Image 1 (cartoon, helix red, strand yellow):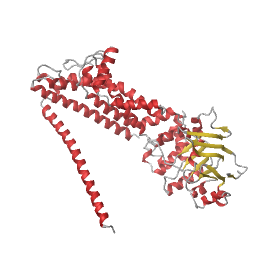
Image 2 (cartoon, rainbow over the protein chains, first blue to last red):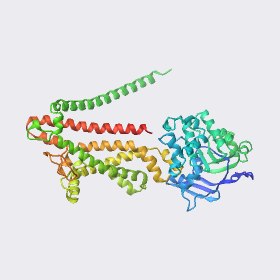
Image 3 (cartoon, one colour):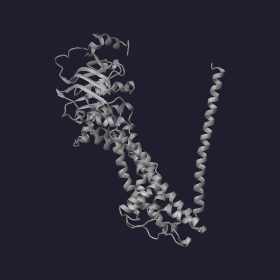
Length: 259
Length: 289
């Protein structure tokens, strides 16, 4: 059984899963996950490769549905509303819950058009220039690109591309940002910038971040979930998970004895 | 240190690598040389007859007055009709197959058969065009029937090359668009198709270049070798450059051989222009990314 430490009273749940399971064909990738993501907090998902971290992340914006053989069971609630309810359109879910991927994946277009894509497909084109500027400022990229908005996004460095992808996500004004190892393709300096950014973003957003780096989880997150073999082993405040875990497997993993 | 046996093995591998490189190089040189000889022969023989007069005149019983005006105009007409008919249908089919079709045995059957269609000899398309466009549709022996027939001929090629261009668009691009709340249609038409467009365009133009060189299917749908006017509408009779060449080569008078070479030169120039356009369009499109 999993150990779920209580969430302090001041924290309001934004996302909640109940007995969430995911199967790829007949293979279970996630089993019976109960997880609560509080508003304006950063939650880190850690665990060895193949433990289901990314699968769990993709349940929150219904990206798993793009994989034909994936099947999701259980419930996911977003502000109390069932994300997988019959009347819920996954397109709408993804507009409210944004996602940043492991490898920067800018569109083959100008910097401006990358950030403007989200507002454009939503039909929010009034004040587009301001929206783009605001998103780029939030992603701490504005000063570097303000004079070259019409240049190709591919001309940016990889670290800048990743911040562009964050800006692109923020331009849609989501309520939650999912990040799937956002710094794993970046050098240490670019990584540090992303981490600082995460710290600033939690003022306005709830953030779920999958990371392979335990140090990163310890640095950026308020809560940490340890997953192993598709199961949630332990979940609670980050300092507790790292300094005083209850589960033996959690302790072994955070002290580097396996994984 | 390396043992003597290991050193021998490495020398042996290096030698066989060099030998393969030499064989491949000779094969390449053989192909290039043949092509150079062919183009050289056409240029040498055709240059004497190739001038503005040659482009402006119709064919004639007198070789010194004959020209390729009808063939050139016919080729342009037919190519335009081919492009206008095959491009939208082919690209739409490719988009459906690649981005919309469910992966069932039925869609796989369709896909396999498109591959097979691309391998069907062009004369068979001529028979089809004769039955379908000339007779059943009542288009007669017209430039329209010719263009549509070649459209059928290049359709599978356009479908296949467009699908390859669409498949080359990385999934990360699709995911990025989905994650921003794009609908399936928005993902396809605002990101995937534009990203694949240079490849689609290149494939289409290369397919058209192939169509422009066809003679056999057009003979079946009634293109004629001796014609003294250019088409003014879709229902007019026509000839094309390859047929003009064929007609002249059959002629016993030696002067016509020279005319055939000059017409080949014109055809080659048309094909080069088409291919150059393909490359130019692709480069321009890619720069805009």
